[in-house]
Image (tube, rainbow, N blue to C red; front, top):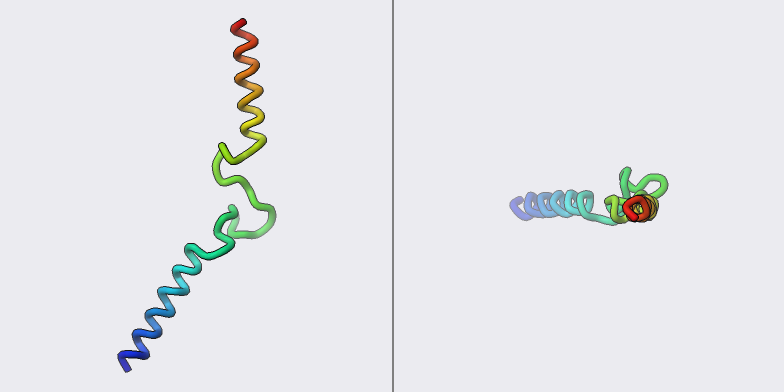
Length: 62
């Protein structure tokens, strides 16, 4: 009986770990739809806008 309970516990832990860290967790929204950048420095549009702002500030200072 103790082996059955240990097996159920082990399976439960494995399933929970799979849900928490398994494949499909690297996208925003639970893996549905288009993947989104996780952080602003991963977003090419954000980096482009940031570069344009910095160039504009340098041009204004000159």
